[in-house]
Length: 180
Image (cartoon, rainbow, N blue to C red; front, side):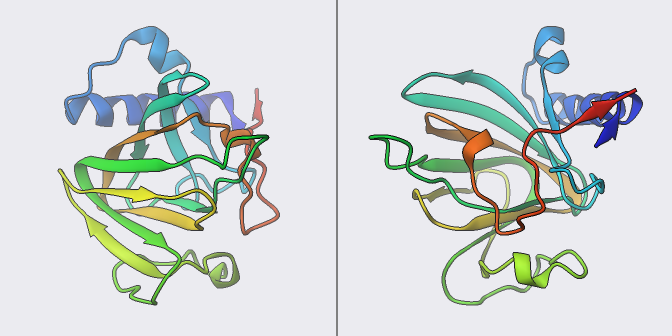
């Protein structure tokens, strides 16, 4: 849950990060930005700011801004009807991003949020800098965290149904509640 003031502050900070990274966005897009605290009430630790450019039945494009050391929690993209699940490519355009997926434990730079070790099981880490990109297949658990300066990345994918994505932490609520 976020207050309206917290939402606006995070949204505006993320919008400025996106602009500083060279992303051209308009006021309407800024006002529609998703600021997600995942119902955990600790946005600066576990959260994310996502701006969707478009999301059709076939493709989706977004820009994601993460504040310094902010973590987008572990999740995966499941099948939906005849769709096998979202295939997603993350391309960093500013800052450093630690991308973790299922595989060999190579975790070194990303820091699992304190007391949340059981909810971050994907430990194959890829350190991403501007120009780096990685593709994650449907059904693969993954999470990512910004470096000390924050990060901005594009997300290109098949159709996104983010509200349906399962998270390892069952306490997560995907749609952020905003209160006055």
